[in-house]
Image (cartoon, rainbow, N blue to C red; front, side, top):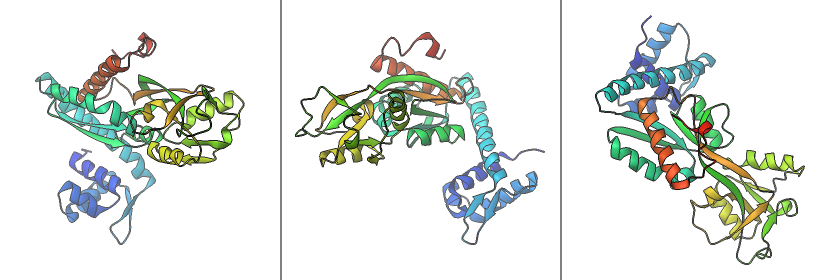
Length: 305
């Protein structure tokens, strides 16, 4: 059986949009053509990929979900084949899809992308933003070629690009402005947590120190956390790296116990990524080495050759 890659690409777009009308608009082809491609793929596989309803909406079957992951993998292999050929001809092109959380998009990616484009102007880059947990899911199902997330990184291969730690933020008129450090156990009833990928590192330290992890007030992003703290709703706990990506006039304090975390690039396998993705990873690594370098971060065991 010969697999029709065009039908496969159309299937991927319909699976992502879960709507034939929207898929046809993005693909710039008619709805009947989209429906025909999906039906032809289902016929060749002798299975149902979608469950359909009257409003053109569709849902993936269980088999469809599995085939979507494999289809993305096949599309990635096809992309890699062309990139290898183009690289041999000294003309690297293609597309890289990168998953990133907002602080990385602000602090690292602009200069990385600028450096990369200066060497590879024909490569298109698509940036998809989310939380660390969302990005890990996207890497897992191959929605993106690579992701930049906060630790932990398992089960993926990873390259650490920055060491990070959590801090407390309070308003200028707060009663704890003279404190050197904010004790998390002592003031746990006042703490506001940010769920931007920090919760795993925080809960781990609480468990290690046999402290109760109370979610008195939890928010989803740094901007919301800052506004909550400005309105004297509590003591904000956030990563120093994330905090550096937003403007504020709050007082920053160290916390006790200290909470460390790493930021790194993840993928299924650094050896199996496309040539363009491999070059992008290399450029980001070099930029981060020069911008954030500490000897322990880039030990031999972490380096990508």
